[in-house]
Length: 392
Image 1: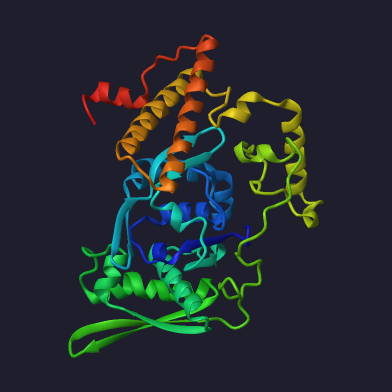
Image 2: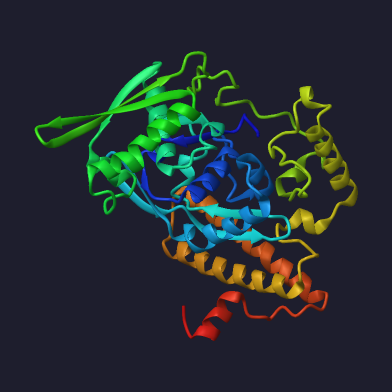
């Protein structure tokens, strides 16, 4: 298990109101741990299922099936409510998903309203080690742990108390229609979080229910760093702090530049897309794999791998064309919707440019297949679903 992975999110995102399944939350947090929070995030985000299954100690075949089911059928529709002072934003996490059964790569694009809470963060954010939540069996334990770490970081103390009403908790956890009885809420949510956080993480966690007569006034939570445990504040963490860093030295042409659009083979570990391994790792398998990849990439100069993320000749041509037609259709629709709003926000305009590039790549790929004699005018699977069932 990689013990160095860190999740970094804005405090607004940690306080947001949303409901996910445990699997969906695990996938999202693992993906976030691969993001450099100090830099601009690329439009498309890739998650390697082999790495994720190894991290969570799950058999990869069964895990891949569950991931496809969770992301493609449920998570796509999940909404999130982010509040910032007087401003409330209701959004979805993502608006496009792409899966690759050969490489077991899950690729998705975050909604533009989510991006500022994950990248280019300068203040009011919280970081914690992904290892602490990896064995939790309750998604509510993860949410309480995030709240506790956020409060500890803000207070810059080893212990802290904070309060929430039952109504606030149910709104944040989207439990308005569940656990009507306090006893059920304690048993299913509070007690499980107390046990898992205290047993599995670097803090202790407890709560006290404050009553006014027969009415519950609020619930007070107490969180404390355990002795001799690394604190998760950026200033006090023993691992390198998440701070602005100077740009890395320029790399020679073709040396590591290709890493950003390279899909690793199943046997190869996921490589840092921003820089090669540190010199202290020169003798490790990871460093050797990186050097082998860089040399192979420079020699082959494979134009398809350099220009498009969709290049896999091993994929059946008909399936490939179906996916391309679907991608072209949906991206065109999405670009038209954004252009119709006449955006003037710099982030949105940058995202729109990225979408146009992805669309051009998909169209180039389809033209290339047509030039090789493949039939490219096949209906996408979305259209087939409409034709066969008479509607969605």
